[in-house]
Image (cartoon, rainbow, N blue to C red; front, side, top):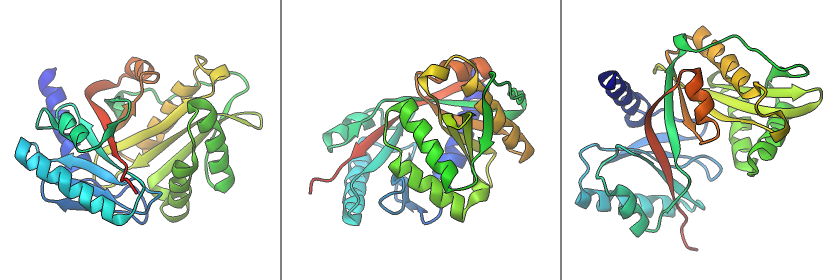
Length: 265
């Protein structure tokens, strides 16, 4: 029902954005006027996670200029303004573009009640799932990630390794292994004090797609989330993963687009 969707979206905005928790060790969340931002080291995710729902055009321009000045002063290579389709003002994306931000591909915000998700892990022959517990496991995750997505793992790998060493209880890393070869990887991040856990980075290398590996990694993480008492799983889903997640019981709440600002040096 639409009212249920709206209520869940409002809960997500309140718990996961307006009152966001730091994503890992060494980062902080700050309320700065009309926005909430996460600030960390250069290898961490830096950016705006929430903007006030009553933001108008004039205040938006002021907030954008303030965040550009602030993050540029830190000397990082880039920061992100995470825009959701329901954010205001309606022309916020155009104002970010005018300020020099560059959009990356949009993703779909999908959420599912943990209690409604399958937790039975069904794997194709020759595949096993492992929980990542050390640097060697993080390296294997990186190999699977780079082959599955064709993107560099270095920055994410640094964040994962730091979290594993300093805040392991807030993170679960999963590997799908075919013998000694990593063929899939995925992460789950817990947000204590909220009902949400986030699924991130789930991917399978091309030869193993369509065989149930991705679904098994979702079920594996859903079972852990249920054991820890989390009520909802949240995913920023790509076009590749969204159809699978919908079939598993996830529903669309919004779309989200990263707008990235890279200071000119």
